[in-house]
Structure formats: C-alpha cells, structure tokens
Image (cartoon, rainbow, N blue to C red; front, side, top):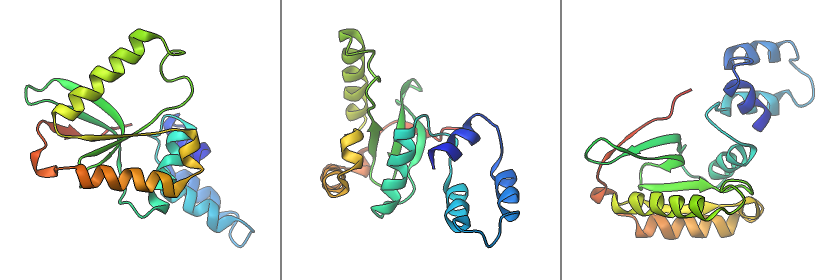
Length: 165
C-alpha cells in the first residue's frame, strides 16, 4: 500500500494510470490485492507509517479519516495539519515515527505539546500511534474507543479543511 501512496504523492502515476496498467495483468495471481491497493491508495500519506495506519483504521472498521486535515481556530489561524481526523467524533490520530521530533530536541517536543494543547482547546481528542501500535490492533482500537467516548463533537470550535495533494 505505501508504495502506491508514494507513487501518487510523487505524481509518478495517477489512480487511473495504475488501474489501466493492472488491466494488462488480469487473471494473474495477486491482481485482486493489487487492484484493492490502488483503489484504496491516497497520495496524502506522508510516510509508510501513515499508510499502514490508514489501512489499520479501515480494518478496525472506522470510517475513512481525513488525511492531512488542516484545523483552524475561530480567528482563521492554522492550529495544526494533522495526520488523520476522524471527523465524526473530533478525534485526531497522529502517527509518530522514530524521527518526528528531531531526535528528541526539547524545542520540537515543546512545540508539539503546545500544538496538541491548542487542538484540545478547540475540543479535539488526540491519539498518538507508534510503530508498535500497528502490531497490536486491539490495543490501538481500545485507545481510539476511549478517545471517542471522551469526545464531544458538538463542542468543537474552529473549522477544518481537507488536505489536498
């Protein structure tokens, strides 16, 4: 999946071009899986981890999240561009890879904490997923369910725009 997301992100090919290419291999082993990967692909994924997390969210039965959603405060200032937004509940899901915070630099960590506080001030719940979470779906599902149970979608302020390519 992540390689298809990357191809779309880099504009190496479009979904239509990839689908057309797959038609050349009809009736070959693996073609159904490849076709599903192309249909599910999203070039807004910025890492392998985000691609895998999006697949896992679907496998866990969540509706399609908004990737790279931009959340603004009531004054129109950008608060955050988040990895995923489960908009039905106002739950932000962030994938934290090993290098996200500049090797643990205090300034980067503090900036991320301030960003997360600003999201919470607007009424969003934030769930952070890491590589180990991808291998423990029930644990991640439980954390997401708790965030959904805490969420108050009717109290969200500001507005959201969908991330574009």
